Image 1 (cartoon, rainbow, N blue to C red):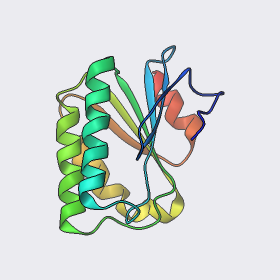
Image 2: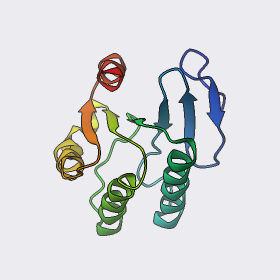
Image 3: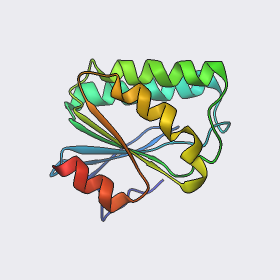
Image 4: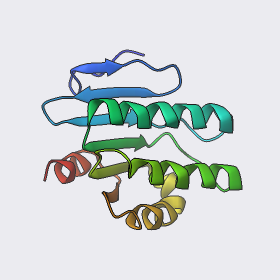
Length: 139
């Protein structure tokens, strides 16, 4: 995948996730794969790589673009993986996480928000528009 030149200055290569880093904003943008496109072990590996990237680069702002996600993660393995990911973020320098969703994904917004709000070390918000999410991350 090619990096988005209007957003990033560095494309962090990974086979399962697209990650673009903007050092001016100290922000990592990650394009979330649709549920079902990866097996649980593949997705777990991708999330481990993401957390390790956040640790190595000391990135305080994370933008998760989940607009391509059109189904709800309702399998116990997927939900458990999401909770473990949110908990793993606490061991990083991340202070703000913005999650972009499409209207069709709004069914799982509440559960994700509740899981994120329990984390003491970072703020978590869900947004429908990129511009609003970026403004919140910059504040």
